[in-house]
Image (cartoon, rainbow, N blue to C red):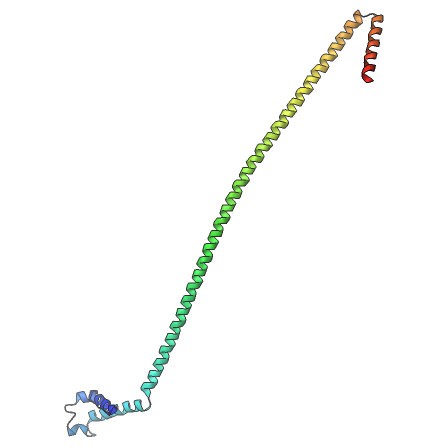
Length: 190
């Protein structure tokens, strides 16, 4: 019953029914009326479509297509979520690398500062050693100069004394001085 009402409604809504003047007259239902033939053909076409279940096939195809689109959307969401996770992972790794780079730069700066301070200490110690060595060389040279002056003064004094002694000394007195000198040397040696 429901199908026949649907078919009647479809027949009434066809272009042929709209174009004819009176669809309820007997002339309308004759085979010579092209409007009637078109209406019957249209109804038969709709009937064949329903008989072969074309609407359900089309609905199934549309459902399959919708399911395919839904699965593609789900897959796209999953890929999007995975991409977000990968991006977050790379962001974390980038932050870690930046932090590590900052630590390396800080360590390098501290090492360079320590090396500079150590170099300053080494230079100061080297300068101090060189100054001390120079002072020791100066003191040694001074002592050598004093010794040379003393030796030269002693040589001059000995030469002068020997000249004075040779002029003023007698043989007896020289023998006494030599004997005293020998005794002094012997006492110091024993």
